[in-house]
Length: 249
Image (cartoon, rainbow, N blue to C red):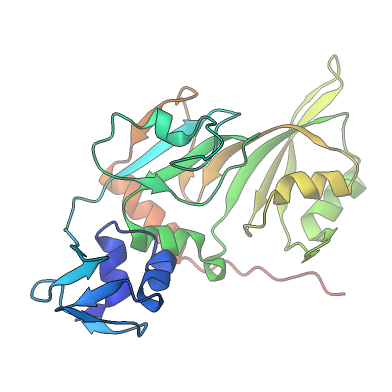
């Protein structure tokens, strides 16, 4: 027997968190009876489970990495008609969806899958899955400012958790530098806001690593299917405990 929301997520209905919303909204039935209790146990082999009256179907779980270009919405649809990641995954037969978000103006590594259980592991705040970005800024931030990024920056929604920060590249001719920053949180536009707080706004932001996944050699706008080993390592990186503490006041 397994939890209902886990079974729904594994069937590719949505992330586990979204599946929980479906349950509490009364959209899920088990053996023709509506279930609204989170944590209800079901047998996916014998119970008939439906969402909005449609039976769920077991499906092959797939995992892809997309090198998302700048100016693309991290969504399958957009009411404003802007370009979305769906425009880059039309060749994928399974119904996959993005894990986490990557800003419209940002680019780089974006994971897509129909494995709702893994998506929940990777995005749940308690797991502190590391995400590494290359932030291009005008000028070269002083070492003391880099230390502020490392120990925690005061933002309007609170102090950020400690981050790993180092100079990745410095170009004196262009008067700009690329800073590698690894964060363990998932706040909205967090990296950009951190650099704005030290008065070095980001001109370009690229995610180069998510958990154990690296963006290496994949052309912009292209996808790559993960190997079983990569999926195993990614799952393990989500389960690892990262001791992330807030800076003392």
